[in-house]
Image 1 (cartoon, rainbow, N blue to C red):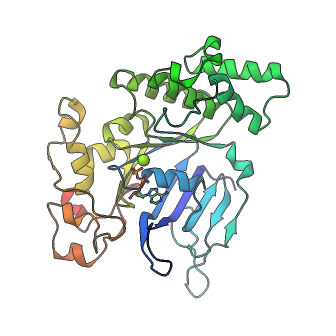
Image 2: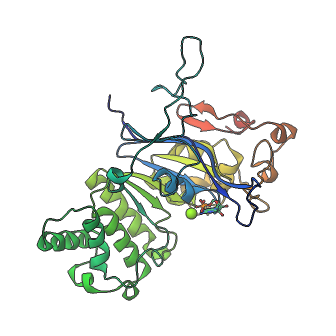
Image 3: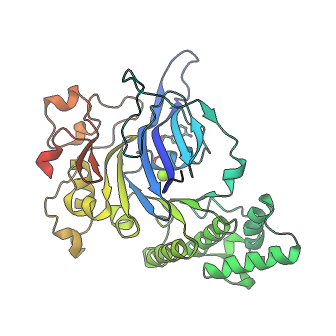
Length: 353
Ligand SMILES: Nc1ncnc2c1ncn2[C@@H]1O[C@H](COP(=O)(O)OP(=O)(O)O)[C@@H](O)[C@H]1O
Ligand SMILES: [Mg+2]
């Protein structure tokens, strides 16, 4: 049965060994630590959180640019990775059990990513670092077409390149120029053209506008939205700023120190968030934004994010949470459904609703 979820991620973990550690020591950067979400076909999931909370690692692990430490990744109904120790879930999200009521687990799986490399693309945060300075714009876009054998002649290749450049607001004259001749915004358009050139279905947009001038951020966002409609694309849209994702995303997931702390429809997260961390992100949106200023309960966070090597016990946010109590250090909060499709991991979620 075809699922309407294009992407499903269950209990995804990505631990990096701490560099400089001895061979036998077991210290890990828990960059992504048990993250689950799904993205319906044609829709956008926004992923927000401060720098270093694991957004990029989530996106890259999902594309298997990094091999997952554990978890399950299902793409278009096909399991492309399963560590074999993750329970199976039914459509309603309940664990599938055997006759004795014990959970059933998925089968250990690791498929070749070759057929998926074309369908699953990424747009990088830094349009300066992500384009080879020695290649022309035309060849950067053309390379993607070559790798996936998507043009049967030079003529067809050239046509495709021009069509893609034009679709992102550039033109045929740009094809023979080099990245250094372009502005940040234009470079990001090249990055988008490169991702689009291979007819993808799913794109991880990793902070595609955060390195760009404020004046052109909206243009690029609008373009990504138009392209989504035109090509039926599904996005995982990463940003550190909630105000950027709330317009483009149907649903939003909020990450803190390797974990999702809250997830729900964009409006629900913006106006009825029930995690103090999400509220602090909303507080960070300038009050001049009339929509969010209604959400008047302002929280300004103190201190830095703790190290993902030794995260705090219990709730990872407790060391910066103005409402933390004793139980927050003792027990990790459950991931509870607090409203239809709205999930939150806070012992006091009800209090903040
Ligand atoms: N390749 C890597 N090796 C080791 N640690 C990494 C690697 N990539 C990211 N990290 C660490 O994982 C954590 C999450 O990083 P990242 O996913 O880049 O966060 P974000 O994109 O939210 O800023 C950070 O502590 C970062 O230093
Ligand atoms: Mg990042």
